[in-house]
Amino acid sequence: MSLKAHPACWRHFKAGHPVTLPAIDRFVDGAAVKRTGDITYAICKEVLDDLRLIPEGKVCSTILKLYNEDAIVVEPAGALSIAALDDYAGVIQGKTVVCIVSGGNNDIDRMPEIKERSLQYEGLKTLFPGKLCATPGRPA
Image 1 (cartoon, rainbow, N blue to C red):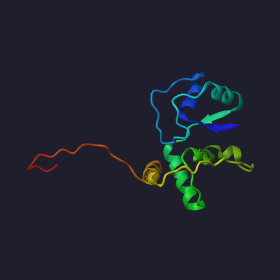
Image 2: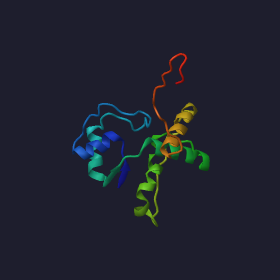
Image 3: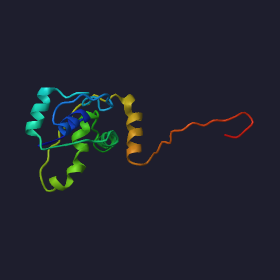
Image 4: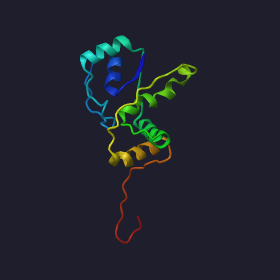
């Protein structure tokens, strides 16, 4: 069995024991924790063969695809199983696969952020942080 992991679970598996992350990105709020519980960690360690991280941008692209192509409203954590499919394409080809898609708890006010993260992930938008300084009478 395989599961898309949130960063805490993934790091626990790399370390071989539960660890506490100093900070987390709460965008995928249904899976965002600083520390996976001891019982959850023990169960996952026993039953999972593989853990992968999914970039938030890919989650956003998946949310938009599900909404635009299939009229499915899904929250970020609920899109993880579909977002993971590309990583396993070679393994699952020709097999029957079931993905659990859950959580319609996605506020419409989040759509601009979802679109922004998706565009950046897809390479369709790049941000160049910087500071522009101008002196009166001189061009910037």
